[in-house]
Amino acid sequence: MTTPVLYGADYSVYTRIARLAFAEKGVAYDFETLDIFAKETAPPAWYGTLHPFAKIPALRHGELQLYETQAILRYIDAAFAGPALTPDAPPDIGRMAQVMSVADSYAYPRLVWGILVPERKGRSLAPGTLEAGALCLTALDTLLAEPFFLGEALTLADLHVAPMLIYLALAPSGPALLSRQKRLQSWLARLQERESLRTTRYPAEDVDGA
Ligand SMILES: N[C@@H](CCC(=O)N[C@@H](CS)C(=O)NCC(=O)O)C(=O)O
Image (cartoon, rainbow, N blue to C red; front, side, top):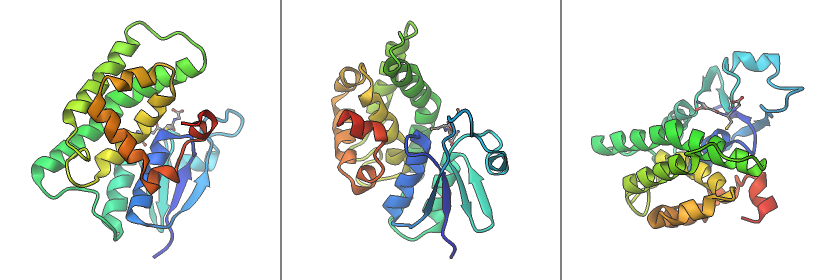
């Protein structure tokens, strides 16, 4: 089998989610850095054939080209040996999809773009932003079974949410918001001990010593 190639950046939430799936499956892949926010260089014209919406990550594996992180995760889980990251039971399949959709639709825009990015740039937050972020955390805490999102086994849901909350924790308001959801906070601490999370740390985690 050819080696998969993942295009993305080490600071990117969605790239990290895909890298976590490779790491948890124990699959070797080539990582091609593409700084999507570098105004002078990105996105290069050739990248348009891989991702028409100019986001990261994108995956190339032999003839297959994929974009959208949930699609990439599903492919990685199905195509390679290693621990299954998708549950078998229909209710759990539904719950996993629900958690991932909550992460994409609410957590990422509110926690990363709504709180982390402006706070780290020293900008004031839009009214209601912290409340909107807190609602996401409450919803995720409610959906969390322990020790993992769906219970006893790690699934794609854990890999999808953790990189968003790790960034939130680096925002000035993040620790206080997270500390209101004790179960979610403990889950995140457990996840961060995993090898996959350790080997994909954001550069900002090392700068901040988080
Ligand atoms: N729906 C996409 C979202 C990917 C995404 O938003 N990636 C961010 C980096 S984490 C990005 O490329 N942002 C560039 C931009 O918005 O211009 C997915 O699931 O892969």
